Image (cartoon, rainbow, N blue to C red; front, side, top):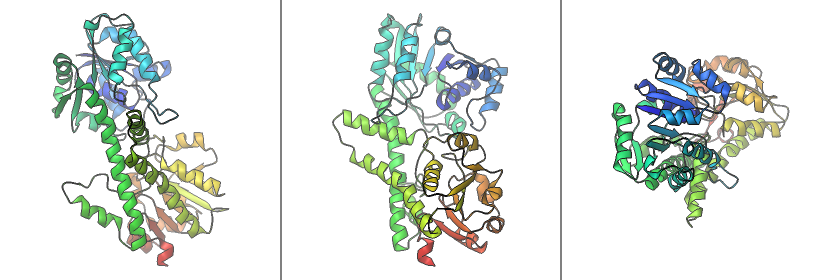
Length: 436
């Protein structure tokens, strides 16, 4: 099938290369000429495990190409995906500026029957908006059909998530358009749910809002555990064995961040307000998340006797492992808190150091975890990269001056840390200053 994807971010590029690898004839569009030139050379503009290998393979197979021309892409395709960003606006509402502009250019280019698919995360009613904009360009209504096909991929595992999805949601007004998408995704052998456009648009926001709520719930429980002497990991395991609850997203930590959860929670609150509903539950979810890092940092500040003049090492800067994305990363909150208190910071992350250094040039980037720990009064584990689980904690302790380890992701065991000579604290158990 001939497919075009407008947008080469995480969603657009991953969708494009996976569909190309399945044997479709795919054109990806981006207005950035340098990015397009890089894509044509097989260079991915995003860090995502496996994507450059897939990109090079599909280019060699002549199933993938890139262009700056939306018109060229629309004339090429039977199906056109809109996969551009929808960042939060000033009031938390999704900013649909890019979606509107792309819809206008698609409308100016359609000359044959075309299925236009909203892959971007958009609020209920966006399908109607896109259709209206396209028709305003003079397109014959018989030539265009709008479909909603929300994505559920996770940064760091986006290729696998796209190739092995839990489900495929198709919101369509007519069966012919739905069948076109069913045919496109048929090689993935995934469950397909066909519904109306509005329901499909709501499913995306509802899914991410629920997952964010689940994380905030266990983080709220972690605060109770710290006060009463319980261990939140044991509590999470115990409730997660209930099949109605499940174990996923019950890992206490510094909270959720990244490009999706913050934006989608804000978006859902804004959508609800527009429909006359005050979504108090999601507001509480957001407040719990916002308080998680400050609470953690107050404990560290107390243990150090203040941050002024102290040197603190940070391990992990990306918002999650296997990505260089630092949008709404908890590391940035930690850095702000430390700098506000007068601390010096050294840090290490396998891939995200350039992105953070661009924002915080005063953070000293180190070559590895041991180098970061050298001479530090305290060390904070912020992102649970796999390589950190293999660290020699005895060597870390020998490098440090203060030997205080604050584990923000519950990667290490207390026994291993204390055996190495470190003073260990984490989320969801009694703080070290209360145990000493």
